[in-house]
Each structure stands twice: as C-alpha cells, then as structure tokens.
Image 1: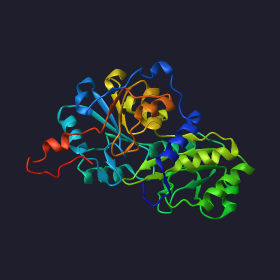
Image 2: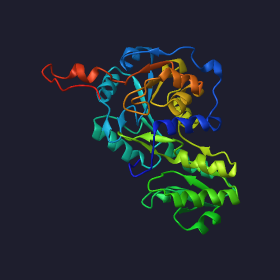
Image 3: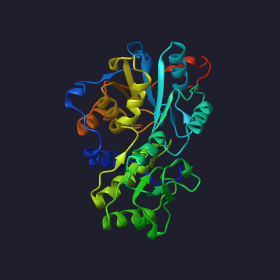
Image 4: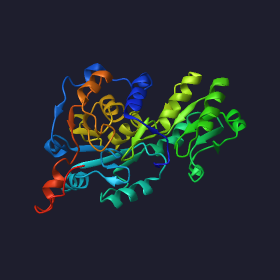
Length: 327
C-alpha cells in the first residue's frame, strides 16, 4: 500500500462502511456477542486461544512503523507456542515484499504465517470463464503477468474501459478522478463484473486514512447496480484458508485481531471465531464513543483493547527512560 492516495476523514470512512454494509457478508445476530469485554492488551486473554489471527495495518503497524508494543507481544506469543497468522488485504504487494517489510519492523513472520488477498485474485478471475479481457486498476509497475487471460492497466483512455469484459480493482495508488469517472460512466452505459482484490474502504497510514480499492468499487457499483465480487477481509476466502491450514484447532480457540468493525470484526464473526478490536494506532485512533459505533453498525467484538501490546513497551523500557510512552 502506498501513501500516494486520496484521504478520507473518519466520519467519511465510517459513513461509507455503514452505507455499503448490505454488500458485505451478513452475520447471524446470534453470532454477535451481547457484550464486549474490555481488556488492557492481548496478553490478558491469550491463554484462551491456540491460534491468533492478526490484521496487519492498524494492529501490527500504522503506515511504515510498528505500533508500540506489537513486536514484543508477537514475539511473546511465538515463544509461548501460539499459532499465528497474518491476514492482509494488501493485494498490491507480493508475499515476499510484505514479509520483508514486517521483518524490517522487527516481526519474525514467514510464508506459513501470511495469507494475502492477492493470492485469491487470479482464481476469482478464472471463475468467470466467459470473460477474456480485463481492465485492471493497478500502477504500471504492478506484476500484471500473474493474472490470467488478457489484461490491460486502466489509464486515461476511455476507449479501453468500454472494450474490456470486466474490471479488476487491485491497487488504487495514483488512481485519479478521471479514471474513476471513466470507470463509472463505462459501467453505467454497459454493466459488467467488478472484481476487487482489496475490499477495504480505507487503510490507516499513520496520520491519515488512505482511500483504498473497495471505496472506488462501491462508487462504481452505485452507478451500474453490479455488486462487486471481492476477496479479502471481511469476505470468507482468507478466513477459510486460515481454517484449512489449522484443521485441528476448534473455532472457539481462534481469535481474530483487527482495528475495524466492518472488515476484521465482521469477517471473524461471519467465520464463527472470536474477535478482538484494537482502538489505538489504526482506524479507531482518537475515537472515544466506541460503544456508539457498535450500536450504529449492529456489530461488536468479543473483546476490545487499546492495542495488542498496550503497556508492554513501557514495561520493557529502562526505568530511567522517561520518554517511553505509548503513542
């Protein structure tokens, strides 16, 4: 994910998630906990789980930086023998690139831990057997050769939008108003499938929320009436893959940890696993009325904490380090 994107305010982002909730997976009300247990950090409840699934942006890192306490928490869980998975909607990067960035932040993950929405894009395209030519939202340096069939990057040529059989929205880096207008007008004139490799509305990038592919997909869908076909949280592909890799772990011993209600919590609830929502360093950073958001969305997590390692970084800091505070 790049910081070279438009930005949303929190109010705009939550309004979009609420508006487009009918296009997201639906959760049986019986799967939504009646109350949320507020805890100090993940380690308080870690003994209740054998497998812990982490969202990346907003849980492990915000922008390029690891969230304080996250590295120590993950390391402690690994030393205790917990099974860990990292699920990401970052379809813009290869698994190797994502892992390299995490290692640069101090995390020790490998390919067995990582599940990316990118790995589901090609199979999704192949399921549309009658469609041969795709227009793809992705920057020119993206590895288009990993996609099946004939593909062309969507640029400023309106004729291309009209020529393709369908659209694949993967990476909104440098996506412009001109391109979005071409997409919407072309779909309004001739509705066609909209496939989405990153269904996020936005992503926390440190000081702001970047607009992601899911936002543009929903705007386009508003014009043509076609429901986007998505892979990535909160849709089931990544959660099914986690369960496939860990068939011996009961669902009530699995915890999904995320920073958004409509991706991480929704996806976890829809998959029948427990959920932990974090409030600092991610989507909810600076928001005080968390219970109000639960009421608006009709969703709530089983647990809520400031961050997965809240208080842990400070405890490990030297006593004389008076600047060791949680951001």
